[in-house]
Length: 465
Image 1 (cartoon, rainbow, N blue to C red):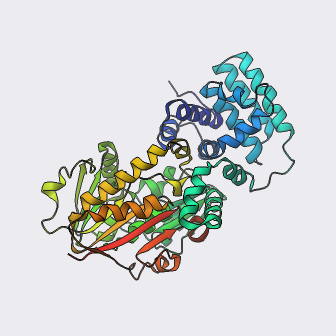
Image 2: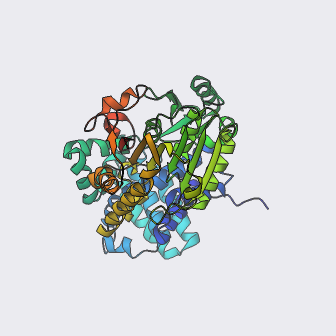
Image 3: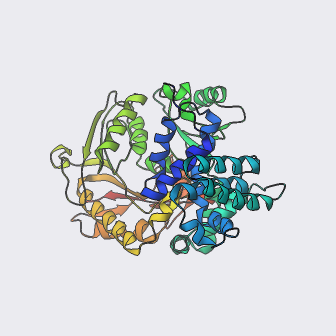
């Protein structure tokens, strides 16, 4: 039996309802939903993605706009079930932020969805509220509408912490630029199989008309795609010519300055974006050990390495380890003298990634959660610092802009280590690291407004003894 056709708007509402009700991570739920919807065209998949992340960025502002037309104000939105709330928000986001979508289409889809999945009464409620909201939409929506709503939806705690690191003015500039660039997807060219120029030519031929595909100046591995739809549906992706990796994350991996024949440890490797870039730099000679708390992520890493052909020639090891508790398999598999490069992309609050991970916003309201993150970061650094060989490099990075996570956790982690580490400048080929500054060349801060990346704090240390 052929799968039932589901519209992009309904699929987005269902994903958002799951994120809302179960506190599930949006990326995983959306990936599953899109995989289960083969009938969706590439533009529809892009619309579903835009609706999910757009609503998550702007939910407080959307709720406030909807509440103006309900009997009980915000209480009417809050007491609704998760699917009803999601359908209202999806329609409101289209009305307030997407000038290309006719308001009547957004309203009609939400009403029909609730009529089928909930009740005639809830459908009527949605119809009344959304029609009033649509009636107020100006004839021409400006391009900045979704950015303004996202900025208005940010918790005060987020802006306070970012401002504590870079200052209030820079914090506002970074956050605004981050939301403005949220339509951009950055790819990492697989230099083992293609050149960047060849990949750009392929994608310009394979992606939808109107897609902007350009080289990223700072890195020879990065390609920017805007309005390209689902890039994983291209033949170039199937052939393993590229992976998807945000530019800032590529810059962090580049700061490892990996060379062929080195021994590399990637801590908190996740699905392996940084591992993949460093494996490319190994050029088929050397070893890479990837460690993560979750075995399923390491399974995905191995699958990605196989797709890209990066498991050819190098020794690849993966270990599921809770580094806050011990070294696990690393006790017996680490090189006797230590690793040449240890990359610690520590678990963090993700304040630098809110444009494409907006579901994190709802997880960071508890002060205890922040303290627990810093303690985890400190414990991981203390555990892996002895694995760096004398003369080797430790790269510590967090995709957040806060002093507690970006600076204090590293200092505390190294304080208990019985060895000496010193700051070391970025390698010559990463001249952008000097340009973006920080407090000296051994500490780099990446910002969306200045660097076109997610927000990162990165430290480079060399072990002296």
